[in-house]
Structures are given as C-alpha cells and as structure tokens.
Image (cartoon, rainbow, N blue to C red; front, side):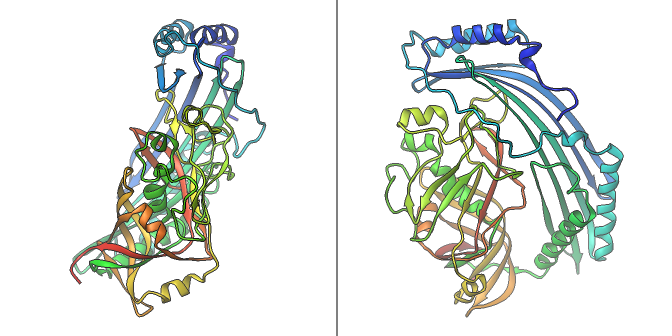
Length: 473
C-alpha cells in the first residue's frame, strides 16, 4: 500500500459533515456521488543515449455529481476542504431543480481485489530506473549495427479513489499502472524504418525491469523495424484480410466497441442502435468486455461510480445481446449497470467506457486462415486509426503487414491502411483462429476529451472484402 494512506474522509473532508452535505445536495436527485482522488505518476524517457526527460506529478481533488433524468450537474475542485465542497454542492444542485426523482439503488459492496495496492512509483530507486533504460539502449545497439536511434521509456502511476454516496455507501480502490516501451530506428542504404514494442499493466515495476522482459521487447522492436526495412509499397483494392491475434483487436475496440456503449445507443447515434437481439455478426462471433481480469491494463475492481466491474457479453454467436452501461444510461434504458462507468479523473463526469474488450477464439488453425488467402493481406500490427461512431466506418494503418498470394506469405508491405465499417466487417468474418490473445498492455482510449487505460484482444481473424488503401497494384 502507499506509504501515506489516502483517508480524505478522516482528515480534510470529515465523513459525517461530507455525508450530511451530500444528502442535502442530492435530495430529490436520482443518483450522484462524491468522488475523491489522489494520483501520483512518474515518467522517464531515455532517448539517443541520454536521459531526455524525467517527470513526477502529483494531484488530488474531488468531483461532486448530481443526476436527475438526463441532466447531470458536476462540480470539481483541487481544494480539499469543506468550504470548497459547499461551493461545489451549490453548483451541482442546479441540475436537481425541484427534484422528485426516485433514488437509485446503491452498488453492491465487494472485498474483491484484482491487483496489488502497492505504489509502483516507489517500488524501485530512481537510479535503478535510469540504469535500466541505459542498459536497454546499450543492449539494443549491440543487436544490430543498423540501429541509429533508440528510445526507451518507463512510466508508473498510482491512482487512489474514494467514493461516498448519500445513502452512506463508501467504496475505495487503489489502482497501480506501469508500462515500458522500446522504439528503434534502423538505417540501410539511406532508408530508415522504425519499430516499437512495449507493454505493462496494473503491476509493479519488478517484472518490467527484469532483463528477460525488456530484452524480449527490444528484440521485438528491432524485428519489426527490420521487417519494415524490406517492405514494399502496399497494394490497393478490395481484398480478403487476416488480422493477427492480440493487439489488432484495437480495430475491434474502435470500430465496434464504441458503438456498443450505452449512451450512443440510448441516443440512437450508434450504428448498432435498435439492433438488440438481432444478428449483427457472422455466426460464431462472440465479443466481451471484461474488467475482471487480474492485473490487466483495462481492469478495474470497481468502476468510477463504485459499481463492481463485470464480464459482460456484448455479442454472442453473432447476436447483439447487450451494451456497456454506466448508472445513468442503464437507468434511462431500464437495464442494470455493467460496471463500465469510467472517468479520466476527479475533474470529469463518468460515462460508459470499455475496459478489456475482446473477441473469443474459434477452432481454426491460424496458418490455415492465411493459407485461405488467394490475394490479400496478413496484418499483424496496427498503429493509429479513426472511426465514425454513427456508422462504424474506420480507417486503420498497419505497422506490420504482408502480401499473401495463393496462400503463400510474400514480402512485407508498407503504408497499408484498412478501410471499412464495423457492422459490415463483423458480418464478413469467415474464420476465427484458436490463438486468442490479449494485447501486451499498452492501450489508451479517448472519448469526449477523456482518456482511460483499456485492453483489447482477439484471435487470428479472416475477414472478407475489406478495402486496402496503399499504392496502386
């Protein structure tokens, strides 16, 4: 646990006083809470043979929310005091008006813990962290003389939250997070290419600074860079595509996952709105959002409203069976919250967000899926992408992909983009591998200006008829 325990309701916001004020503020409301947070984070970047950046940040504050129907009143402050809470209460109260709402049931309490409460920022001395990055730089350069630049970064944080509701329900959670990333640039005959690898989760730094771990990541970054060094211009046209397992699930997250969040469906702006109970994907396709996997980047013991996180099935055997819900949208849609009410910090109101979103595996051998491609792309690494939630249309860039002809894997291709829309792509899935994997722990998700850590995953997936953007074939 952190060396100085986070006990805001025993010190700066006396619990009885805070609870009394909360009850007065939320009288006539349907839901709401006082969310108090303390966060510490540390980041080190070793670039081009030297420590380029070392930062340490600490923050704390509270957010007070009042919910009445579709209206939310929210006020927050970095000043942790009863006078500041009183001022926030006056603002949040404006959303309640004359009130008269029926108060929502409290979240179910739990003693479950999905990750350690230890502070990873204090787990290792600063010199050890710097030396680890220095060793990564030296190790990478020793692997191949074509490496001209190495960037290694290490990040750790601890988020402590305490949630108080006017019915007296009190929930706490302590959330660690770590990540290590290695990027290299290689040069050959005047051509430069890059590769990167990394990962982490809600774990301490011990595993990440173990040479066995960072050496593996460094070799993988180099492998990707060397693959790209030999890459040819990508073809263009409509063709079949096999997506690799693990991180390529980011396409699933963006093109489909956001469309299954409750607020978009309640408002009718999602491509999946009104399709509950209908076939939205090929038979055999099952998609889940699961915040209960121990130590994973997207996992949460409880969400930011105090609701227990869940393992929620969204699509089952191709049928749309559920959405991800926070408390407000669940109540308005007449369903139960699913533990997906998340917020970036105390300065933000919660909304339905993903945790670890993945597609279950099938029974096909991954090699057989690739062998089924007559003229297509095998995409095993992804970079950034863009998605329109209203229609599911997406554009994703590939960081590692190969041309496949007559079932034979050919040269790597550079500059490939995958273009399509989520609902259509779901229906065009023709094969699922038996190699389902989660990503290594590096996902972040943006929505309405808020960022939260997430996880993704999938098996090797054969999709027919995606548009591949690149150079003319």
